[in-house]
Image: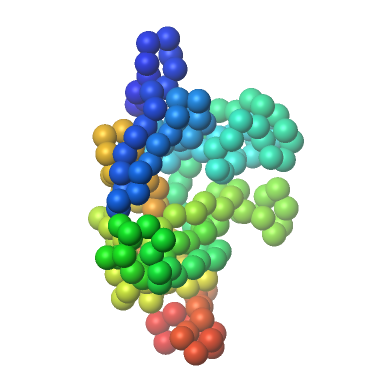
Amino acid sequence: MADFRAGGAPAPIQAEYLGMSLRLSELDVENLTYFRYCASHHFHLQRCCGCQLLRYPPMPGCPWCACPESEWSEVDGRGEVHSYTEIYKAIQPGFAESLPYLVAIVDLDVQKGRPSAQEALRVVGNLVDGEGRLASPAEIAKLGIRTRVRLVFTDVAPGLSLPQWTIDEEASRSAVRPWRWDAAGVIGSVGE
């Protein structure tokens, strides 16, 4: 799974994504491990050995109990949109051809309501189609708060895949209606 140098140290990752240079130093052990799992299209997060809570983003210590020990656990990448933003001005030139694009914060189904009733394990990523390409404006219009999504991976380079979100068409037919602001600033249900 992982690409390691002699002596067990993880090798750094360098790649380019939509014209943006990506680099993870060999000193960033937690993120290197996270992205190595993503490169194999398996979603793993750190589970604290103290309080047993999962955490994201990867980090050297637990944000809830400060325990420095953790183990990597495979996690189901399904959840619902907690929040999102649509980007209409590219801050990186490579994104200009894909405008607008959408960045979503997703409440994973796992660990929802923990450590408190209002919290969830929230993971950020772009909205993409089923092939991992940035979503079209028509796909973006289908997404709102509470839309069901699932994780997919965008292969960027050998050893690097980005976790992204796509609408989970099978799960999106629930009784809970997703909602979004329209262009006039009015709240409406998605698909109305």
